[in-house]
Image 1 (cartoon, rainbow, N blue to C red):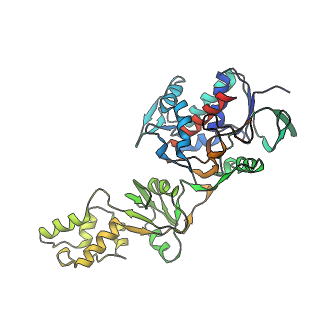
Image 2 (tube, rainbow, N blue to C red):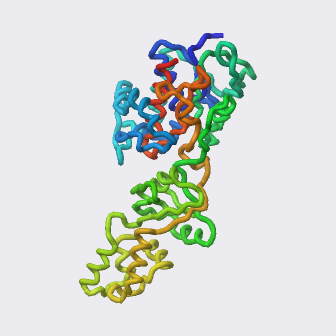
Image 3 (spheres, rainbow, N blue to C red):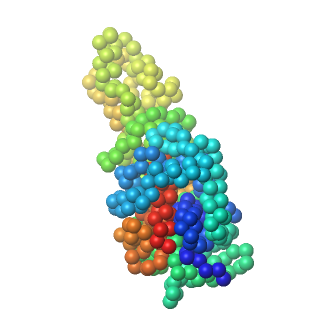
Length: 397
């Protein structure tokens, strides 16, 4: 059997970057991928366009028990390094919104092609349609039990890189293998859950949300910890849209969220100005200036739409202001891993070297990407973490 400096479990963003960088350093790796091609999640990201980094990336854009852990990897591989790397292979970034960078070609497959080219040119090996069933410690490293086109066999290596991702999305071969492997070696795990995921509404309230399905509203969604100002989307089962996905990483079951449906205006000021002009218009007329007809009709469940603004009592005016700027939502749950962009939680950063991402307890065992307790915001942050962690690991192989 060929001798490898490391076997990389998972041919996603982190695994591909790790193999590419190791190859550029003259090292030999084997990438084991359970799908029929590498980069499955890259290929579907951003609607097939791949939002491959964010220009504003910093540790504040990540959910982790210890965000400071990210400083080392992000100092080794910066956003500028990502731009330079892809530009050197013919991909230039186009900023869409909020620092999100997409390939100028708008094709995720071009991102994957860069890695497959580097792996070929640096003589790295890829084993497709192969599942790693178990990883065991040996006297001089590790034994991997794999099952693929040639049936079950065992591979030996001194170093293993766990880049097999998290639990989203099952149809792309997602699994908890990295977490199970960490537990097998008695490493601490931060509880996992779906993140960047739509939220569901059940019970009597569900019908109201369903009546607005398809309506998108620019809003500020917030709780006591954080706020996000982007679009929300009403659906038949609850809420989605960028602002909802963002705050879902911070939401915990049983908690309430608040939505400012009109964050760029002050309704108190608008009502006052309407009154100064005589207040002859109805509340519905005023709201029609800012919302769709269907949204205004739905708000009629809570607000006195057919009342003239001049006739509003203090209590009614406060009700309108609070409903629009502090709309209360108590989600029943989320749409689960199949609708989640990423997994929250994972291998505790306390178990890993911040510089190399090698296990402190199990020398030669590395964890990168989504398997680690590092969850980025929506908008390219998770890719930047995948590239940085893959690079950092490659330096230590």
